[in-house]
Image (cartoon, rainbow, N blue to C red; front, top):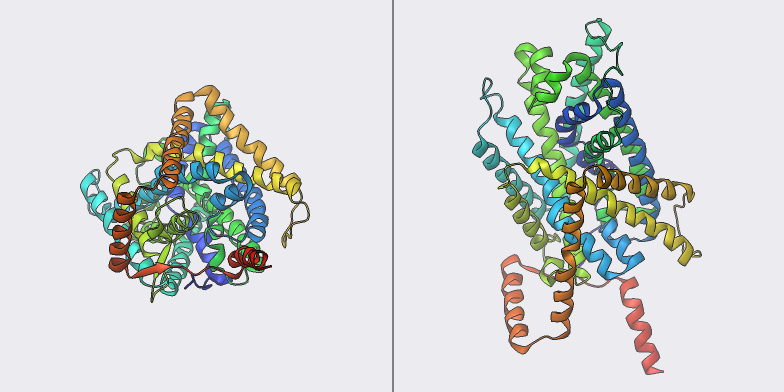
Length: 479
């Protein structure tokens, strides 16, 4: 009983592109332009965010082929700095990083799906939330049912997403070619304040978040040492090109105030360019959000699965379906937490907390890469990069955290408080694991048995590498 290696190179590229290009490209351009003040500076921010993401992806290519566990930065922090620090990463991911990004994508899907019905007024709050909840439920079911099925759906929707973005790009380039746009004063009214630039970069990095997608499912990738780095090198330049060209298309057609104040940017763009065919764009956005949320649901469940296997979460989450080989309990937990976040009215405010936490723990995982180079210099590294790249990424992460702490400490303090709130939870869990009372053991055992029967799942078998230390200890005892 193991998760099967069913993710090929094409599927890997599709997962990265599908997860990265989600709701961000339809939400963030207005906020980035608002903080930057000009088209030129905002385009520089989109390019800079792409460069930072490429450096991070290079570092994660080495980490993913060296530490061949699923779970991405959780697994890498666990290997480098131990269980307590890894739990804080897990706690932050459960509270902010994963459910926030999924809730935002689902709400964006609901907003664009009902937008054509409410052309002259704002979309109903309850309609957006109900559609978002239905989408989360559907994608949770698809991922519970079959991994191959889920991957095929992902490839199909990612292809449709790229085609729809290509339509937007072509419309923008035609506008520029016809001389209907004026970008001659691209840097006029630029805001060069460090706090505004850092907030703009947070929004950009939120849109690029997803380049670490394949590291969450390392154990399910065919020929991981070859396909993991190759998939990243194919997918990320594709994402950066599409992002910059799409943002340029927005800027070539729409006025700055229109971009900043629009709640459905792609719909506003469609009204200006496509006329009677404007209904195509909301469908395109929905396809994009569906693809991104689909991959996010799959990957988040693997994080819960790996954490439960390391005894940081209840054991039931580390069990897989007997016939379908999918982590059903982990998928249902992820879906439930995301549904709860749909209740939050201003969930987009959480993007800033997401950005701070994401930058911190990704930087910490890459700092762990530097630490492991020193601690384990002779460790096998199938894909090895220059130490210059992890150092640069760590410096960028420190800068992204230091500027907001200095200029607008409230967001940063809340982000820090969320991470530190995991300390008492970890201490309580450690205490209970050492002092297991008989009544608690019986209650826990009955609950786990009931959930196993309900989800029809069992614990996974240990791999040869996991069994080797135990077999070595048995041999020593026998001798």
